[in-house]
Length: 512
Image 1 (tube, rainbow, N blue to C red):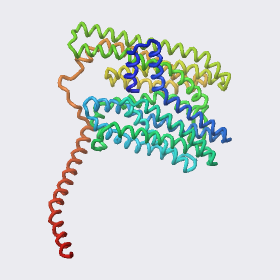
Image 2 (tube, rainbow, N blue to C red; image 1 turned 60 degrees about the horizontal axis):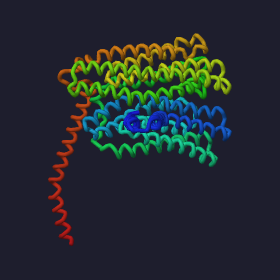
Image 3 (cartoon, rainbow, N blue to C red; image 1 turned 135 degrees about the vertical axis):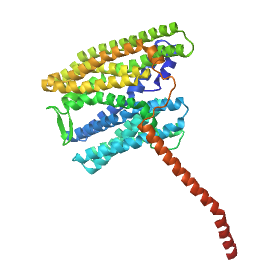
């Protein structure tokens, strides 16, 4: 999450030893993983309320899987634009064009709402559920598309605590609202859908208030982002592949013989998805530690290297800082990966035994263990993509994230015929192969970093002229001509106004 690094650097610069170090890690954990934990708590609490009100198991599954569908597919759709949006916001802040940021937000959500709305209407039309539930789920889905986008805009201006507070308020309202509505004898499933939607709507309103307060308002246009699409279109691919890589293997097993039909056209694979959920929680330590390593240690070496280039360092100085940058990058990656691998061994041994004694059968336990190791490699790939974007290697980041997304789906498909005891190995193999490829690619890229910095840059920079830029210019020209026409008509109307007004006054005087 953008912005947390500034707070971390403050904490590490202060004196206080282990206390400030613990504060730094706690800040990272709360900011980066807090929203996810709050969502899990909310779903668990509402599922518990449904059980307390003696709701049928099928209705409990409908609520849980519907909410999961809304979260997952809204994230995949919006995540395709979030990396692109983050880069656009950064450029606007750097170039002091802040009046373009809020119009770009409205432009983004306009396209997301239309596209997401079409997809949601088609899918909801296939479901045999009450019309009220369809409307609430449609609204929830559209609101989530807005929320994911708002989070990108808020984190860019270091409003990450506002993001966390919003999730907390939404969770409390959803849980409290469910209790109140159920006490009023409203159907429990309807109450759960209504309260959850209301919680996220309130969160959206709070986030919108923050955005409008901070960002100045510029002229609205549906083509605000178009010139940047030609420039940063690879970031859209990176965002899309990152989301597909995270969930694609689940979609494969939804087509397996172990899939569960909650209702017609709503499926999931209980054995795989539940094991996947618990395995995904084990990567929280990696995500927290990596943010600290990236924002504090690696960023320091990164900044020193480019400061040496910008402020008159000799070639020898630049090469020395390059070696230091490479050592720091791979040292931090190795340190974080070693810690996470140790955490995974503990989880496989102890958490696996706990889950086996509670609800897991041997098949789910086997999947859980494969996925624990697979997620360890997944977060390493995710970290490598982030580091490549640090050096503005957008093409490399897109290739790496796309390779992982494609391989994880392909390998999962290949192991389907082998039986359930092999489920999860496809994700593991894809993660391991892409991690090895990514490490080699990053090492080679850093070895040739001087070439990337000095020789790959154009001597005279020109904005790329592509189809989106040309379309934006065409639309802007049409808007300019329409505006001039309105001004011309308005000027003629004003020129005629005093004479007609004078005549009217004369008539009134004569009547008086």
